[in-house]
Image (cartoon, rainbow, N blue to C red; front, side, top):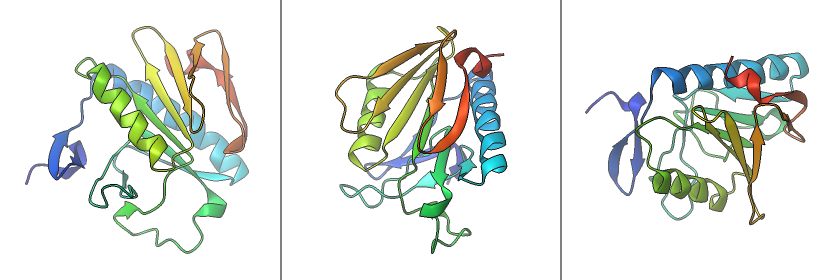
Length: 168
């Protein structure tokens, strides 16, 4: 079996995750900014792209690995931290667009997250320096440009930064 860290399990098949130097750098920047706030407040845990989520009611074997994810600390009680995959949806997942990502596959992944109970999805577009925010239960996404400030409301109450910080 190939290196499992670079694959997701979708419809019983291994699907390679796309990445580039730019998308990896942006994911690291986002994760670092979120982690600083999470460590300061102890409100949440921030996870890198090697944590898989196995919590899809329509396909219990499906495993998705977002570029960055955040789970509020109060939701982690009773979950074994050494477990291989998260059995619960994250409060935020971040997907950073790579050059080989196809738009329909990204939208499909966003829909999977939202329908499985992930309340918030950020799709970051490094080439145009924007963040599209999808919220469960809302039909319209919000787009933030690099001069806009983005917050994380009830997940990390004190988190706020300019979108441009993700790309510096």
